[in-house]
Image (cartoon, helix red, strand yellow):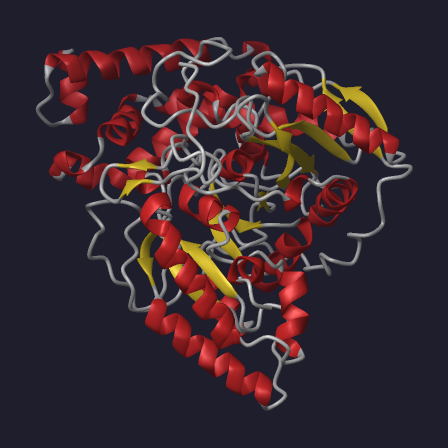
Amino acid sequence: MTDTADLCYLQIREVGPLLRDRKASPVELTDAYLARIARLDPQLNTSIRVLADQARAAARTAEQEIGRGVWRGPLHGVPIGIKDLFDVAGVPTTMGSKILRDNVPAHDATVVERLKSAGAVIVSKQNLHEFAFGITSENPHYGVVRNPWNLERVPGGSSGGTAAAVAAGLCAAGIGSDTGASIRAPASFCGAVGLKPTYGRVSRAGALPLAWSLDHAGPLARSVADCALVLQAIAGPDPGDPGSSAEPVPDFAAELDRGVAGMRLGVPREYFFDIVEPEVKRLFDAAVATLEGLGAEVVEVSLPHVEHAQVAGNVIMSSEAAAWHATWLRERPADYGPDVLQRIRGGLLLHATEYLHSQQLRALIQEDFRAAFERVQVVLSPTVPLVAPPIGHTLEPGGPLNVAPRSIANRTTVPCNLTGMPAISVPCGLSQPERLPVGLQIMGSAFAESIVLRVAAAYEAATEWHGQRPEIGSQRSEIRY
Amino acid sequence: MDEVRQIVGVELSDAEAEALAAWYATLARSVAAFPAEDLKRTEPPLRSVPGPLG
């Protein structure tokens, strides 16, 4: 194992057994990631803080434990990145904001605590869209995160630093949060796998909120199996999170190899394809054909209320965010970036009736999906209707659809935040001619992560997309705007 | 614009107040387009309940 890029691009399912069998060293692996971060992050800006000393100490501990025959599991000694809205004790949690620049928590978030218990090495606190309220990760306080596939494109957001770091081989996997798109959209834009689990499956204790009723925590990784391994470590009940579920946690890897032959998969009739770039639609259609070729039956399903999902999601998000930010909106407005300030302030103007109508709409969309899941096991769509847009051009109309990217980026992901259903984004190709990643979204019924992962794993095994690596820094953007 | 300024509670430029009013008006119009009859028969989930169960 002489090439550090190869070492850093190993999947957890590959490197875990090497660490267990002492054929690879946690210290050497961590050093390889830290060296790669030092070399590439000045361009990509995925990290707000690199935890080099803590990571090396954790790696040494892992090496000693494994040397004594104490193996904690597949994450033992594996470097993981954390979106900088989850607490790591003693390290600032900024949420990508100026306001929280010096916010130092005393305790780990539950997901961090569980990762550490599993032996993972926390390597960095990762950059994000300010206060997790946006899909570009053009952060005014900590700098713009750049997409490893094209440095002039956004990585998506709000977990943009995490997705870019995973795709660039700067960590083996990462933890993100998703309130409307924030795990799946950056996974799609960066060519990573991103899973938003069921609401309540993963604790949000120790994570700063954007909108309580829509916030989810979940993994980003370079394969479906790795997502399953990380989910296994962080899932389960937690009294520290009022939204946590007592639902039993299954073995998420158990069904990964069962394939899709005989399964029935749904494609929505309404909404999801009203606004979609032709290249995204082409790659989505090819992905559906691949799944059919693997023996799945694909049928059309109707989700009549989902056309209102984006409005309902935005009303709920801005209202809940405005409630959490109320004091700072009055006392520190100058400390917000302009785009985030506008959307959070807007929540102050929304009426209670509009919030309640949006909550009612949420129940109607759940009914739609409930009816669909009587006929199919998962529902498929493009993760995002477009490829990663150019940095600095996300508020103005442009691209093949001549729409502002920010206005449509969460329209196909936010339905699952409203319903709480699990959904994964898995790479399904590169657009032409830009060679930018596109994601396939697989949505399942509540607590059916195993089914979602199974379909994603079958698709991944039949294609080569997840193995593609960006040639970082070697390309120039052809801006179409 | 005065109403917007009153609700927000801090000094706003005309451009900021107009942008906020336009943002709200767009969203409010879209909420008004929700299917009224369907809303009538639906109780809002005032705490988040994951679903549907598979």
